[in-house]
Image (cartoon, rainbow, N blue to C red; front, top):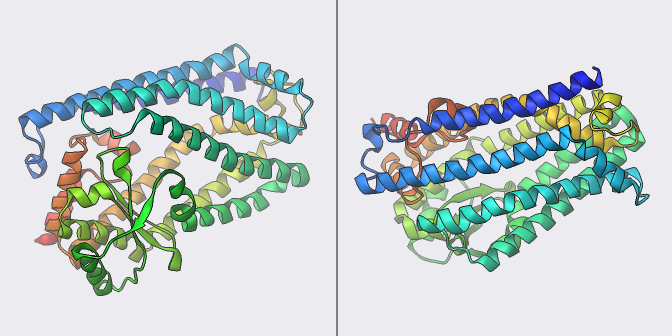
Length: 415
């Protein structure tokens, strides 16, 4: 592929990706104000529904401007040779290809953070504040941003430097060893995410003795699920929104309940939510999604290996081809992979939504579908969730079925 053809292909991918995102947002916006299905019509009264619609509109506007700024930056860097200028500037320091590559991505990460920061700040301290969700202080916001940046630089730096090292030693066959290494890393993250990474941002404390803990242990024993680690996370210091999740394998498995979840739901409703999470474990969804991630990573690395030494990948950025500059090829490949990644994401979402139905069914059969339905309704109401998203938007982006779809399935199970 010639450099000029590759240039227009990249520009087309960037433009089409942005346009498709905006089109799906537009379709989703056309559903505002439509009559809600009977199954969810009792969640919002007229006043609260109007508030939810305003909240959805405010979020979509911020999303539009954030995406637009990122889109214009990306296009400008290609059109005006910004990436070539960045590489030339880094070359003046005389670093080797691995350090230069790490700095190349670090600078782009910093610029991305700077561009995104105003929108993140506005979303937190204007929109979330206006609609009664935000509990975060400005100091905590800054601390979170610094921590997130440091973690991403450290973890990303280790992964990238390892990748660059393998390429320099094994050439186009690097992908096999890289696949093995990243697969081990993914397993490690799944096992230790809650014990190593979550404490950087949140405090987790064991669930105290009482009615809730007794009810949880009673259900877990009934379901044949040995559970020792139940923790409460202090989500209320950032938001009023509630959540719960399950992480780890074997003795490292852990259930984490947000303190806002405990404040919002009854004991039966919390146990129903927990039953849903246990359903994921019993159905081996965590292992299946981990396997899917490993396979996807293998495909990505294999394809990258095919184009590793393609000179046009460097020249399209205005950079003279150098086989040791793996980072240049990696950056261009990440953009070319965007359409494939989008479709892979849609396929994965189909399976994830199926998993959610199965976890709901497990909770309904082993506990009580009405308690899970009530919990889902309360959580949706408390977070002003969109109850009428456009079907195409759901298909492309949603990892969970809509509340309406979940309630229909639960009531069918109940009958």
